[in-house]
Length: 176
Image 1: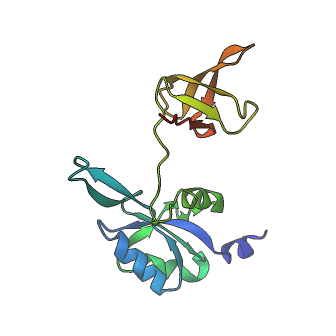
Image 2: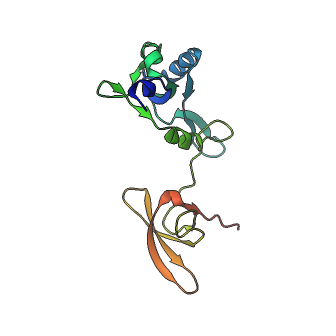
Image 3: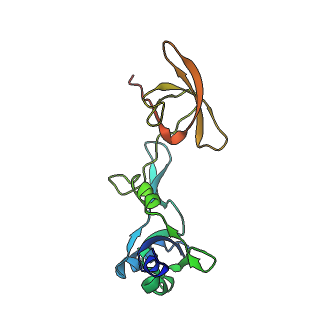
């Protein structure tokens, strides 16, 4: 693809906002006709009887907008609530559609990011993908990078340990 046709394509970009003005920037960019994405989640505090939920931004001071830099970058940079578009050097840095789609896939019916259940040492898990798909085991250790686990796989004829990406396992919820 030539440089000219690449620049004429709309891409996703991270837009840096003014403090606590994510909503304003999002609304103003949508008013320009741009597609935006502002992932949020609910955070609870207090006991069950007095539980308060607060809506928070997954990426404080950042929203995502899909636009054509040739024709719309100036508008974006001068939109109320916006500080600027994230750049490497002088060039705005596009974000791959796959990354935005992955984040969007975690948005629940209420419009908020839903986090997977925490997985801890001793939890029973099932492997969801890869060469060990469908095997079950017990989490023995969480690695320091928090993205990998050591799982003890057990079957009638085999017992062994594997290190696996956290994203490839699902916690087994036992009914009591």
